[in-house]
Image (cartoon, rainbow, N blue to C red; front, side, top):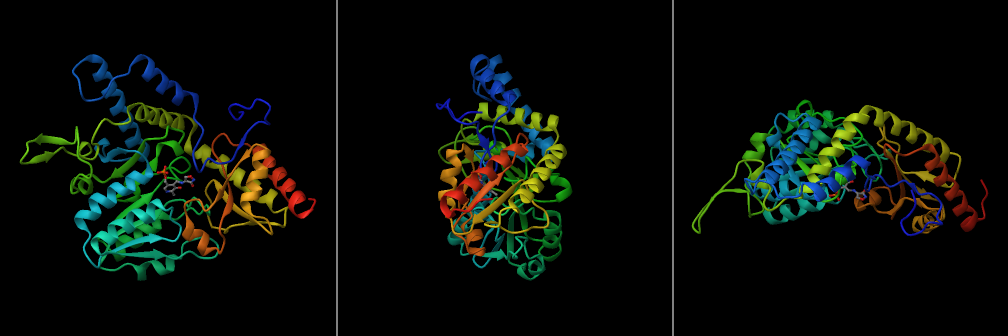
Length: 400
Ligand code: 7TS
């Protein structure tokens, strides 16, 4: 793949799949076909074209439900992404059920989306945020977890995989500890970095909410998922008002639609939902277990290659690692390194990865992050290593 507009470039080594994934042709084709041949709105007409679009839209919801092993497709709410899914729960569940003095427990590995959304509602309600600490290896300190859970814990919101360190959190164990120590607490799992890497069964996990983004699982931007247990979703008020989320409207009183329509006000991202459904079909065909195996081998290979360079320090050493590594370089700013890597057409993210508390925990401002997807090859990692070798030559005069 070339960077658009520059045909002279070296081929692109795309090592930023944690930010967003490239798209399989079937996803692009499905969206293109919808816009060219079948375009219409959903749930708004008796004419056949609209009925067929509604069918395709709802088929995608069924695909998502099956993908997560939800008990029913009514437990799947379409949102704009992980960020919006978390905000929906905070603004709907939090606004109704949090009181002054209640506690929201998150972890020290969260993306800002799973911090700030709770801070906003906590401030509004006088609730308190507590944090599960992170150990030096990048794993959560689960020995501290029971002590952090109290009768006031209303929500536990934890990421499945850290986007900054790569830690795979043992969410089944975390959920069991929460259920045993704070049975009144609801549990939200941020699956932004796990949904396209690790098979998830929400019924087996017994989480109340599971959220992810379409664009990180080989689907389009602009669409995401909120899974919620039906009874929990059904207890929640709407957060956006508008079309299709109502049963009846008068100027005096409005009654709301059932779940999930109650949470899907306005014309949805129809093509994106159809694209997401296709992405899930593609993932099912390729196989999540196969993808996980492939990515684990890449992680192993990257760790081995990076160990050859003493100036490269890998952030954390978690028991289980997702499809990413974060590194710093002795004596070189990661932003400088990222610029040189870009000259080599190696795309990696540098910065705090919207996880500033993680950077603070490890005493760094920023890292270089290399992350993998189903299409990543060892030679992409070789290109990264060669790029780093050039950086070391340029900045430190060091040869490897
Ligand atoms: N949660 C986690 C764990 C994430 O990694 C991200 C995005 C989000 C939530 C928010 O997802 P969004 O699709 O709503 O933006 N993480 C990243 C990243 O690491 N680089 O770019 C986006």
